Length: 292
Image (cartoon, rainbow, N blue to C red; front, side, top):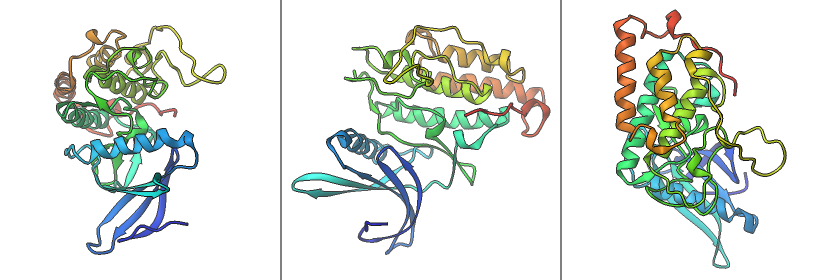
């Protein structure tokens, strides 16, 4: 460890990301534990990571919701008037990502995704789109809490991005088209593709798959997806239809907002409870193993 953060004691590295590391730190005055994201600029190519970290802080420090990971403090380390490092003090979330957690019962997935939808609805009311919902950006805390993390690709509702940003297998069609604004329905697609993966263990066939044939970005035309219920018979028909509706190519054909997604998730939950299948550990709730 070759850096220090005045006012904080650094204990251990928790993880790594694009040009960044996450550390467990303790406030020396209050004794509170936090996560600290350290982003280092080593070349001009790293400027975009600095920009994303600044966006992450700008959004997550202003939007307050229990499901959205909160940032508390930003510190810049400058040399020759240029930012060389960023330190972002964030809420500590002790747990694993949805991607790391493996298979989840249907009832647990309903709980998780309902909370994610609630957090995204709050973000949309703040007039921002997350635009990078995926299994690795959903944290499942040891205490049962669900947290949406990483707002580095967030943008105002209606914003048109100058370049492709998103994650293969979860990216919406409008995120790869030039001149198309991103809206709440972009997050609806990302959420639907993530739920598809969680229910089936397979990636949704987006226009930008993760398995590239060669270097760079490979885009493909729209492909037909197999409904989750056909891959995993334990998936209720209503839930399978919701996933497929969320992933429609035309944003106008998707649920209008997260409130509609929440209402439809609640209908599925009601049906499961009515049939006595909503308890974790029942045969109905045993999902297939998830393949990362």
